[in-house]
Image 1 (cartoon, rainbow, N blue to C red):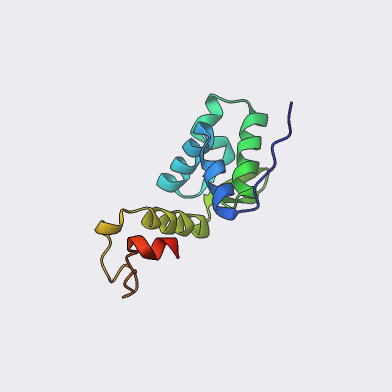
Image 2 (cartoon, rainbow, N blue to C red):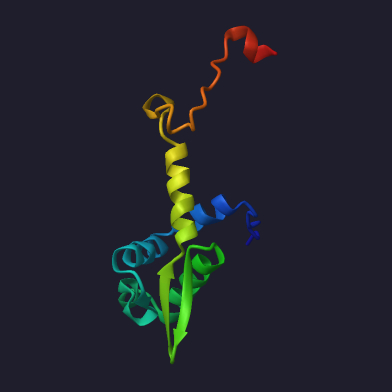
Length: 119
């Protein structure tokens, strides 16, 4: 089995972490409920404890969630920085025509003409 090289790009790592259905389910639950004990994650009923731990580790390493130990349990929550990064990423993917000048910080983007592209 070939070893997959892990990206150092934080946006790629964020998107890779969210690409798994179980991890996306965890993130959605945290987004709707806030702070959640690992034992109360909805996916826990469908997955083994080691598998859930693996998914949580991937999410922590990608900066998506943080964990806080309380006694024998760990409570997880979304990292505000990850949510902000996703928001910025989504806004950057909007079609250019749907953005107003204020969304671009008052900047106007130069439209390239046929001869400009070749330069």
